[in-house]
Amino acid sequence: MAHDVSTDNPYTRGIAQFVSGLGYEAIPEEVRQRIKLLMLDSLGCAIYGADLEWCRILQDTLERVDATRVSSVWGTGRRLSAPHAALVNGTAVQGFELDDVHRAGVLHVGAVVLPALIAVTELKPGISGREFLTAAVAGYEIGPRVGLCMGPEHIAQGWHSGATLGVFSAAAGAARGLKLDVEKTVHALGIAGTQAAGLMAAQYGAMVKRMHAGRSSQSGLYGALFAEAGFTGIVNVLESEYGGYCTTFSRSSDRFNLEELTAGFGETWQTMGVALKFYACVGSNHTTLDAIRDMQQERRFGPGDVRKIVVRGSQATMDHVGWKYVPQGLTAAQLNLPYCIATFLIEGDCFVDQFTEDKVADPARMALADKVEVRHDHEITAKGAKFRHLVHVEAHLADGTVLRRTVEAARGSEKKFASEAEIVEKFEKLAAKALPRAQLEQLRDAMLKLEALDDAGELARLLVRRP
Image (cartoon, rainbow, N blue to C red; front, side, top):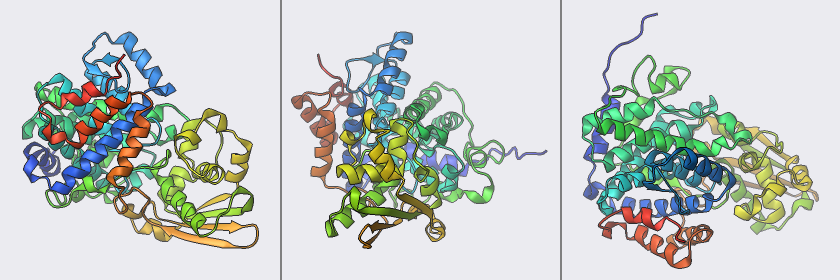
């Protein structure tokens, strides 16, 4: 079987040109302000996540095998090598389903960009706050575009997009942080892209799902550091007809759109499409929870009033969160839509305190989850990736009342973005788990006034829990 051996790479090179050439002044003010809030949110998620069981296992294991003490493990007093710190910190950001998501691109962006980029600031002291912000934007712009290129088929096929797409965001941010030229950025992307991996079966209870973002960030950091040293990668990693990222991670060439990779550079800012979470569960569940929240403002009802809840959503919603709930640990609970609906109805919220091991097999939650029906709506699927979280929700109550809501965008999404005060409140609530008040305030102010920092390495220093 003959395969194309061309190394033409207009899209990989186009991405590299954007990343390498991006300047602070070219970034609109609204994007600069938005990314600071997004990054603050991610840091809060990581600090909260650092002490979770799966994060402690990684920290303990890597500390035994890694004698290097260069980079900080956020929210702790530990240090590891830069790649291992990126792995651990990315896992912590994604550690409890609290972090951001680019819904159309299907990617948790901060969890892959920031661990690699902050590690760069520790390896190369003196990167200014402005340069750090610019590098972060470069990272936030790329992964979502790869996600838009691949479309909903990618995750429906079984790939965990947050991991497979994330390598490109991580590599782009780290490459810009290291000030790599176009050629070396091409190689950084090519090195990172060949490491892309992550299986969606991890969502059914495995701790490894939490690790996917960290592994992706680590791969991107490797890509940038190796390319800086002259190591070469696949120069047409996205375009290659045989063994390229797009052809390999999609069933056929008509399932992806290469033009999305470079569409709108300098005009459409995908950073503005990143949403924040105010529930501690997977983003696919948030529109439904918002629908129920809205219904209860019309009429208060509790678990005993519910005959059934019907959710109609996209095929991606069905595959990702619509499966029958079976107790398999916190990961499965946080990803399962019927369980999260039951939790919300019983407790009135779905934040960190609502997800504990003792509730995973709670008979009341399981009985209520069995009253939830998640159905595929072909019309929603046909609208494409940008509408993958659109849901029509019906609450059928025992007295015969039927309440209905349609929600396209969740609270905290790009279309209903949260206020600075709401984001700061969430950050402070999460960061207080590990940092004293004075230190979390210093970290908060350093991020919100990032442009004023002479050395962005100050962020890493403020992320270390002091004795």
